[in-house]
Length: 186
Image (cartoon, rainbow, N blue to C red; front, top):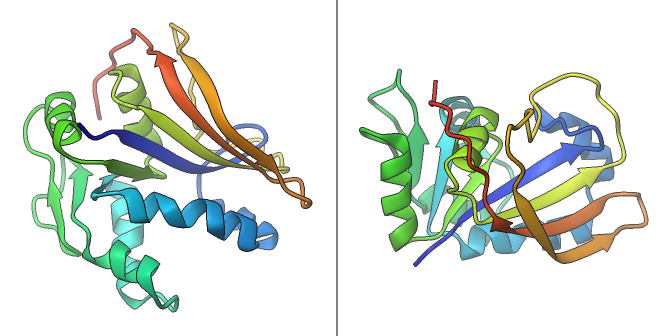
């Protein structure tokens, strides 16, 4: 059985949108934390907006090596109700999103980057197994957040953490007690 891993760059106030604000903090420790995510994944699971941004940049990304090769070659499953034709080794998720993701998760390790709306949906449908967070010491005030207000709390176990000299926190959480809300995906 696989798992769904949500990997996010997040500000101290919970924003994950348009993470260009992370660039000044990038270092080898963050790279070492991020690299295994792609290496361990069988496929990416993305929302439409994140897919479109990634598909526009990764095929011609200046980075070279195994990370870029894996990003470009691995299958991508895209949660979209508006796109039927996709490129970059991607396919739209057909039918019921929760049911399809549960089936995919039974067979493979899925990695989610960005995709705030999709992450909310997955969390509410108890489809997230782990969160790998890079928390930056910045307050952004607005933007899509990692966790929108939830009706029921989920419990997570911290399984790894490291505080970097630049104030960035690397944290991995395993979901131990899932949420009980079930919103629809838009």
